[in-house]
Length: 314
Image (cartoon, rainbow, N blue to C red; front, side, top):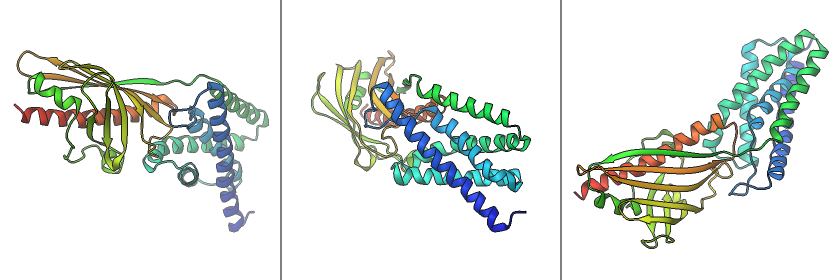
């Protein structure tokens, strides 16, 4: 019968080995996908495929369970130690990969769910002592990992929002092109805890081809080029460069923004804000939820500010 120190050793080994294998798999997958796709993200970072956050955590859980299952731990212990393993993985990403705290906050629930899933499923399989089943499941997981690595990974999304401004279109347009600093309090919870939020926009000229800057909190600047400039109608701009903030670096590129104005014929104006972005982290069904939420709240913060400025001018 194992002693307490031996039990602790097996628990620690399970956590450390799981994280070491995860580092190798994520690093190799990131390198291979970047090489196979033939490009890097706009910020010079590789793509994180869905296996990085689903298959690899399942493998982490299975490796941990290999060390833990002889100890006959209860389910709550598996969940607790899997949470510790996930926390260590996040700390390693923060220290060595320079990932942002908010980014890790977003990804940690996904990793935890699949790490626990992998550990509990593996415990069940190991307890059956069926080597054929074990080999089949290992082969299946590796096959999914390889298939994901060699698949195409592209994710271009559009987020659109609409707001009614109680002012005529000629009063709204100037504030769409450039607006004074936003001084209102943050409402979105991610902005409140430190994610950069829009503060001000400036332009170099009032024509297509002129430069535009969108300034975010902490001094971050998105450099833009206005490609469509139709007064009282449409402003479309391409993003030339974006800040190397750890919360977005290598994970998302905002490629284009747009404001469309519509005269409602009753002294009010409909403002439509559109943004197109490329996402470099998968699975898309999970990370698009976050990206769309963040983009939408950027839109609304700017558009609500435009509404305030325009209605003050009436």
